[in-house]
Image 1: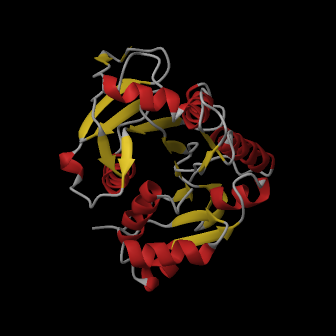
Image 2: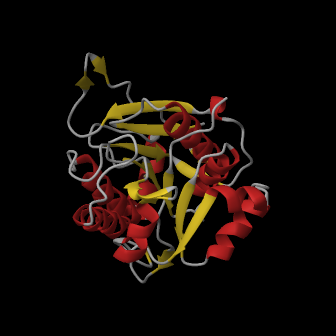
Length: 273
């Protein structure tokens, strides 16, 4: 079997979902970049949580030190690690904020940065614009990158995609982070080929840290991005409603279906047990 040629850039690689995807990507021999404020923490997570050998990390992963709001650092991570004149083929985005308690009866939980996802994707787009000025405009396949983001259920405009009893939690506790995810999604959905060739929006239900059960155990629903309900004669399947889903299984799904298989472009995918 010939080695994989697809290259990837990871943002938020120390998150449970994205870290799993990165580990599987490296073990499968895909050359990747990652932006990390503390590179050693990322290396330690890959080695301890996923048993990725150090020699595999050193061979296939290029880590750029920096913050996702730093255009220079983001630009470096978007370049193909094997050919700096090209972009990576795929962007895997798992940035998120940290919950913070606040004195509010209506919204007791907020984020340490309430616009973190929206601002991070905006920065990635600005970095792509800066690279275009430098003549770095496409991947080795001659296309713009595919962008896969980890979002959430509960923000679809096409109907309910979570069990009814979860709605109070989503509205009362998770409203602030979900608004950030919603705005971040809209940046991708409305891009229309300006910065990226397409997107895959992954919407897991409530995430947990349980042991992996396997991608085959997931229930998978999907809808077309934006207002479309049918494309090329294929209609929305609709969401799969569920209570929880494990981070490792979501990360495994992203690797198997988005990275390895493909064919999910333009879809918003709900995942649950």
